[in-house]
Image (tube, helix red, strand yellow):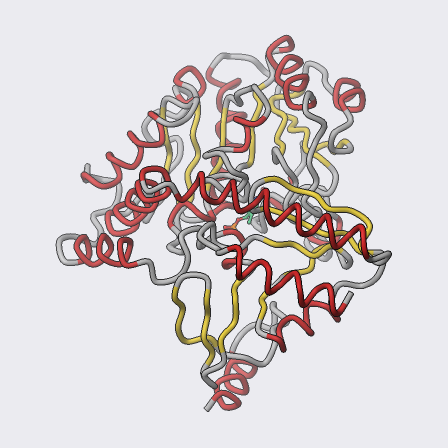
Length: 392
Ligand SMILES: *Cc1c(COP(=O)(O)O)cnc(C)c1O
């Protein structure tokens, strides 16, 4: 059966993904099971998405209850779950208002549109440029790939959108040099995810915040990968003693259900009046009910604190491995968004881990990324570490 599914998928689907020849059919907690009955410990969680693990009974219940009541009305009407979710996000963040959409790229699209619209509404002409970082990743739509500082994402899609400039991440002087009267916003990931789990200096984001405030530039943080407890705090900006004007979320917000959100301060979001932006599915009742329950469990049942603690443990174990093996050159990250940079290709290690029953991920060719569910157990980490010790 497995071989047939793979053969069929490879025949009928766009060949945009390179996948190992396994088919998953069930998950529970940090474990996934394939159609052959083999189990895997999941150290990638659907790319930092399933923070509470797979098939969480609380979320399944919230989802089923709402599905029995109301699926969808569109945003022509008010519904309770999306109101409650927006209220929760506002109460727990710097933001005053929320716009819901369905993915990370859409959240960033909304942020880019809001930044430009903000200056338009103020009657300020010519402020349209967005500065982003090299090695950033902001999505695959035309707007967000234009904002992404990696050429490989843009190949064959020219002409990309105008108005994006790129500076090295964590280089404040380069950013300062690039700012002028034409800049509407600076768009950054607080910790670069796809770029290799790259953390800035502790004061970088504070300095960027200061510069933006001084020059009347909006600061957008893309917390699509870093948000929702992934780095040990609800939002990664909380590590850096600063706040953005706009923030985007997606990935873990629905623990696997598709949802994105763009949050902003009152003064900024006021640029989005009726008709300025919209989404048919954005904040649909079933998904917002599940997302609200995700956030409740994450914060009220101690999952986030536990994840921060486990992350520190995992980092310590990875650091010990690095000390032992010459092929490991650096350990990076915060909370349970961690990486081990190698001086060799990462793909063979990913393959060996897969065969052994560990799902890990390789980015940028030589960086192993670890983003397990926040409920991952120390024994599960110990098992992976022991195996990595063997194969490094
Ligand atoms: C995954 C990701 C995106 C894109 O999200 P999609 O839901 O795949 O559109 C954007 N920014 C960052 C930082 C991401 O990690």
